Length: 181
Image 1 (cartoon, helix red, strand yellow):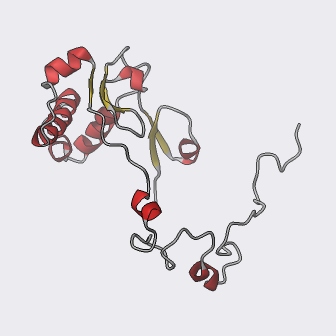
Image 2: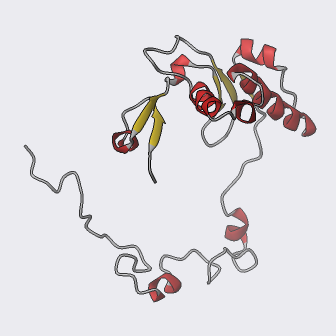
Image 3: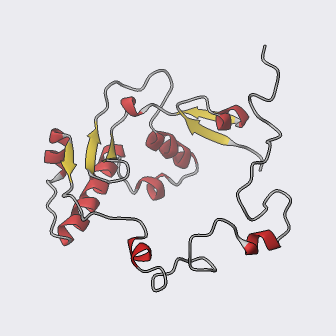
């Protein structure tokens, strides 16, 4: 690998090791969509830009558009749409899929003005409910068909750093291993 390029709005570990760091703007400096409800996926929210990008930062879309433009591939990347058109297209694709499932979502303009759309609550879901009900019939994808704390297969590899069962292994690099100053 000749060159490592990082795109971020924080000075991350990846940025520290990159040859080139392109400054992305924060979520407050661009428009976007986001899922509401991290595990439940309760809906979609409109993330309206609060301020213009600061300093030399650009949105991820604009960074990659400029990058692909320099390679003569901006049409393949953008499909001749700007960032806001992409946001609208993604929303409308989601809306079309939900209409097939008899769930109405407003058109993009109405959604963008309101700022959110909530999905109906789904059925209660319990992970591995069928396994809990009858573990013999509804076996898991493990060699035994049950929850396994240890693995004979992994143990058979004979790795020093992977015993096939949970074990504490002292790390060679840890923040509290070194003397405090």
